[in-house]
Image 1 (cartoon, rainbow, N blue to C red):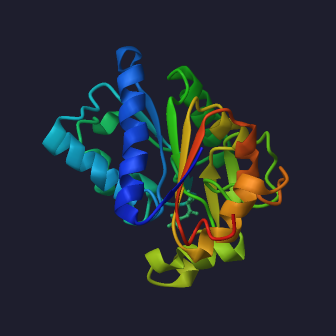
Image 2: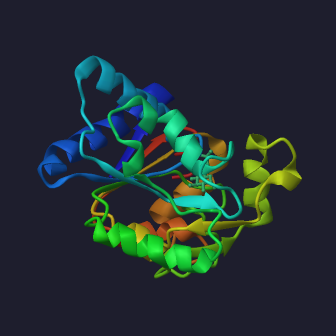
Image 3: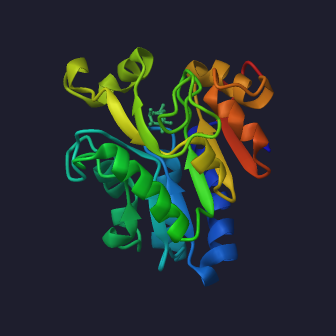
Length: 242
Ligand code: GLP
């Protein structure tokens, strides 16, 4: 299902609605949310915080699993995705800190940590709703072009384009880690429901491939065509090549 919205505020409403519906449907069994970093989901997180404060939307009992983390950054590091999600979302709602899970970027054995993280998601019962952004090259989480469509959580190398795209969050481009721990495309597709959000012309080609391209590891997001319940929320610029 593709929603084309006029601005970020309308997009945030549409994404928050999918969260609210999922929470209603799954709260009795303990909702498991899959969370994403990057700038795209932030308006939706802000809207969820507002609904928590003003409309009593509750996240009590929710477990949250992050998609990815930079290798080398411990959870408390300023640029770590664990810190990002706490600052932009979970610490402002009633999700306990201990219920926010992320791959440990500082683990001594990153490959073992990746496999263990994949297992922990399964042990929690799997993800009820996964929110996703999309990279300009069609990556989701840190599954860069060439990632196996069946991939599991693992250590990945980042492309030059992704490092350049993410350099704005760091003081120097050389500070951007070159490896990450990322849920795989196969792992992500096990989420029972997915909502992907993107804005701006820079995402237009990736969004067009996601919705209309041939399923291929060259555009990792095309693997979402294999999933039965994906909502895509995009603004007119991101939808301009559909
Ligand atoms: C990073 C993250 C992705 C995210 C992408 C796009 O690479 N690993 O999960 O989708 O950035 O980020 P933004 O939403 O800031 O454009």
